Amino acid sequence: MQPLLIDLSIAALALLVFVADLLMPSEEKRGLGHLASAGLVLILLLTFVLDMQGDAFGGAYVLDPLALWFKRVFLLAGALAALIALDPAEQAFARRQGEYYLLLLLSLLGMSILSSARELLLIVVSFELMSLPLYVLTAFTKSSKLSGEGALKFYLVGATSLAITLFGLSLVFGATGTTMLPEIAANAGAIRSPLLVLGVLTTLAGLAFKIGAVPFHMWVPDTYEGAATPFVGFLAVAPKAAGFALLVRLYLVAFAPLSVRFQPALLALCVLTLVVGNVLALTQTNIKRLLAYSGIAQIGYMMVGLLAQTGEGVGMLLFYLAAYLFTNVGAFAVVCAVGAASGSDDIRAYRGLSRRNPALALAMLVFLLSLGGIPFVAGFWAKMGIFIAAWHAGLHWLVLLGAGLAVVGVYYYLRIARSLYLDDPEEGAQPITIGAPLRLALIVCGTAVVLIGIWPRPWFDTALDAAKSFLH
Amino acid sequence: MSASEAWIAAGTFTGVAFVIAAGTLIAAALLRVRARKHSEARTRTYECGEEPDGGAWVRFHPRYYLVALVFVIFDVEAVFLLPWAVSLRSVGAVALWSMLAFLAILLLGWVYAVKKGALRWV
Image 1 (tube, chains in turn blue, cyan):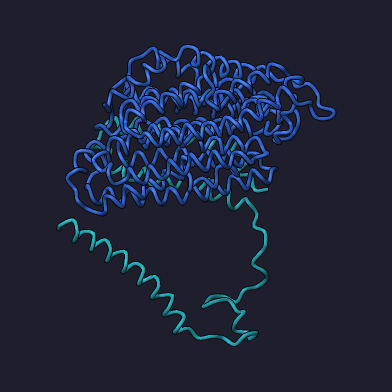
Image 2 (cartoon, chains in turn yellow, brown; image 1 turned 30 degrees about the horizontal axis):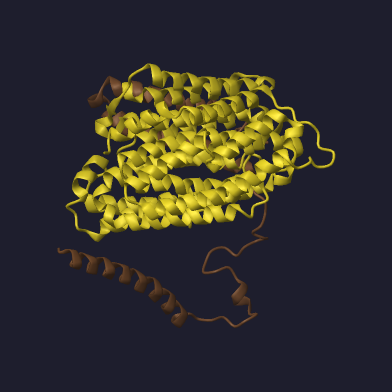
């Protein structure tokens, strides 16, 4: 029972929110958001206090340091997303807040189980538990056509990619005769069946859709643009992290004996993702689309860590995910505040932000610097760590390519940062005020980004320990 | 089976899949009977069934959809209850409590549907 405690708590919290939604009078639904985020923070603290490691269901479910790291990322992302959604939710879908938080928590439960799953069927079921609420949440602003369009694209691509993943996994099962990942890892080296190679590659294509790697990225910008902004911060971080949890468990552990076969495919995906993400971000004029393409580029950097196929690489990937969580959720929180005040997600709305709300402009500057990887904020150490790990693994030219493209990235991030401070605000722009929950989320994200930037040591150590617990 | 034989088998499998797919399309193109253009036969409902009455693009009321969704709750319940009832004696008390927890969660879904007015026939 012990290893399941975190997931059971999340499920209990979801049911609690569900019941509270039924009992509360419709004027006081605001309390649901507080309940959800406070509950998630409580569960997060629980993960630090109790020692629950171990496995359940005959090894199909495991709580190891890797799963624990991912669960903490999900819980933090969920708590911040619930916090950020409080005020906009009040305006956009006051009557349906209960459903919003319930779906958020259920998706979170799916991710949390996924990060612990070591059995193919459990992986598929938890994967769907994660994905289905996300489609609904993307379409949550019912009155917006963009929201419906984004959700439909997301849903169609998601359903197709699931079918492809399932097909791949069925071939893997057919070739190895087992659904348990440790047994697949033990058998895979001895099996000379092309079915296994085909299965491994097909599964990779399906998962590439999920994490939004090029050329499977088409849905990302449209979905981000259409979905409600408070939710996009969550969508951009948590499901991607879950995808990487699965990639690590499948490709670095279970399919590791086949690495000669899938390494070239993974490498091609990584290079394409890095180049296309960074280059297409250059021409965007909508901040959400820009962050979507920049997110694709960030996925590329994380894949470099995966490609290293060493404990160090995975450790740096974990560190990157934590830095990316605070940075990206924070950046989308700013987009949320500016979007609510000016009614537009165009990057022109960010001109002279420092004169409309200096604190908000400073927060955005910190997040942009971190996304760009400028020294002494979290994003710098994240990129640095990934590149060093890849260099040690012998991927020299990939590191040089990544570093070159990071410079391209700095250009489009700093272009916005510059206009925050140096341009004049648009005619008739009013000062921006933000509510207390959003301010709290911004303070948490901003402080974390700066703190990790100044003192990354403990984060590096924990991430490396988690990774080296199963991979050397 | 050696590695190369296995690859040949996989290749043959893929080839047969393509041949069957392409074959049906080609056979349909060769064997089909073409109705004359602008003839009545060409615009009629395909193959069989009732002659349609009125347009197909009418609006369906979403209440049918809601009732169908609520039905799924009980449908799933029945699917799980049957094997549970058969094996309850051999599995014992754990099964009893697990099923009660499951039913409680399911009941919540039903309460939700009633509370949100999904069963009101408006």
